[in-house]
View (cartoon, one colour):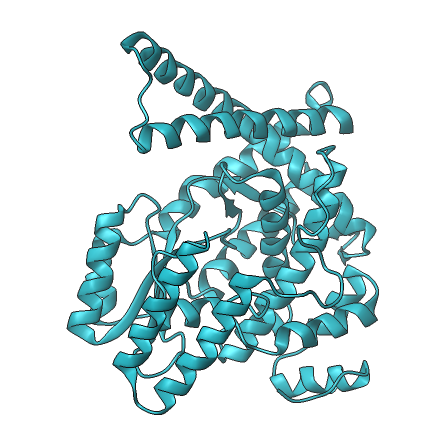
Length: 412
């Protein structure tokens, strides 16, 4: 129990750091006021979920409640199978695909309720199981720390399956830069999203887009229960990297400039994909089809990636010439063209590129940091050594110096 109390106090400190160091509502002003009816409250979410998570933890330490590794993995696979069926039934209902008879409709509703109840019952143990498996991988990478007499994985892996908030990204119309953003409730409707974006455009002459998130580095980290096992495995590792980096210069420099934000996200992406792949395999899921991602060397960009990057470059040129309306018209033409090829984007504008440009490996990014970070990754040889190499960086110049030491070209 002493160890539990220490972990509880330390975790509470981590909550405070997560709330105060992470400026999730980056925009204060008229636009922030405009979004008030739709804003997601981090404080409310933490008050509800943090105690529930950590008060549940001692129950899992009781000998008669402990599961073997294989029992944990079977529980996780059962949860994802249940979530997949629940998602399918929900999606059919939202699309208006009704069963052919009233009796079948009733059975579908009852089945969905049953699946949701099962997911709720399984959730705490599945979260603990996933946390235990990822923790084991991180410990294998040597990422434990001495805290007093204890050797602990710090920070502890902690996740919560819940509805993810959405993110309202803002950019000036005459250039592509993430000027700010606000977390919005996950249940905001499409009509409300479109109305909000249009109002911001008309009233404040800003480019705005509401985007879905893959995860959120609150503590515990929020993950969608309806993502597949690959996405969940990658997202939980990605968000843990953000938790880890909060305690080093790289994480604390997240909001100092766009390049440091991009460096943080690219590091988290690479580690998330690598550990996510290994976690997925560790849980006993079928092998991922070759070509479905990973952290290898240079990859040939696909059609959508090439198109988005060419679009980004052309838009930058047009905006530099002051041709804002022409750039916006061109982005809409490209969005329609991508849709014809099966790559659907609800909105393609300056704010879209500003948000996704924070992820140097994103198809919408033309930032050279992606390949540069990969060079450091390749030289490091392991997740643990890679994080040790980059975590002390607080300025782009320091990263460029590290890149030179590993044999890569400095500069962008």
